[in-house]
Image (cartoon, rainbow, N blue to C red):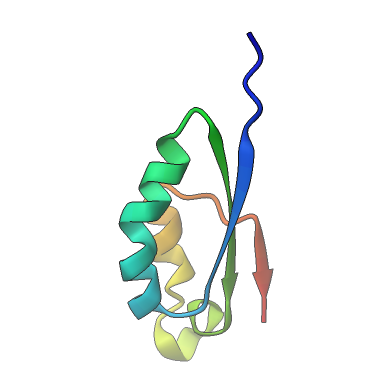
Amino acid sequence: MIINRRKICVVTGARAEYGLFYPVLKKIRDSDSLELQLIATTMHLSEEFGSTYKQIENDGFKIDETIE
């Protein structure tokens, strides 16, 4: 049986909101019926704010796209 997976796109721009999204992102990633598409923007990409996109990757998430 083929399962149609729904794609869920999440856009995150700051560490604070990523922390709020984290439990939901894990559930989406681990779901058999959902596919996570993750976009990192603005502060995540800034060295001034710690390049927090690295934390997202260290948490086991694939960043599908970046927008500066």
